[in-house]
Length: 305
Image (cartoon, rainbow, N blue to C red; front, top):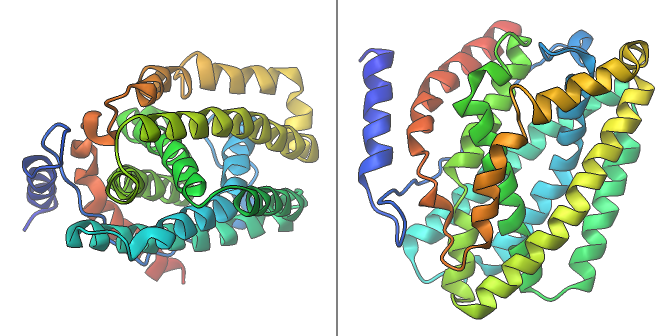
């Protein structure tokens, strides 16, 4: 079967089946054991837009190992209570996907530390913060926070897939790793939400708790991410050479053209609707490229390894 035919079959599979109270889409996540070997000598300038956008993406990578561990623990804590066998299967695949993301980003982040950037310091800060939140909140709160942050990661994944120009032209191994992560974030974007609905319920409690969690997550996420970016940029000689022009280039990337953050805002706001469900943004067609990307990643790893 040709790659195009495979992609068409994938697209049909992802758009014909049903998911409750959404746009007739269901997606069963699949754990994929992929390895990526991005070149260490490009860790500070792999993005086509230059070192500042590179360090913004690198700063995001530093949030993933601790964040994904929180997501895994939050879903796992309810897995035995899930009444729906398909959702339980999806939850297991979600946990597997997040474990793979964490493994690959830990290796990626080691490249940052080895390049003289403060990766371990920032990673430790994230672990301590999230461990403190988990220790001081009630059982459902980490799951509500997972729903909120999964909305962010799904929207960011959607941006990278829907607007390929945001990454095209970047170093291919880094681009492939980020596209893989984006695809799987879209693929499993509803799992934590569905676990919450099945195990805790719908209604006013659901809306109030997840809205509170999103407000808290937003208040923490953006200041921490931008603080990490600033510290990474200050430690990177290429960013220091760019000076304020480099920061303006990042601002344009986020809010001007291509508008990585600006274009997310309408869908971000939909989270606060009482009737929200992640698959109301029916973007399952973007997942048609998964098989091709898996083939490319396996071939690249076999070549480099």
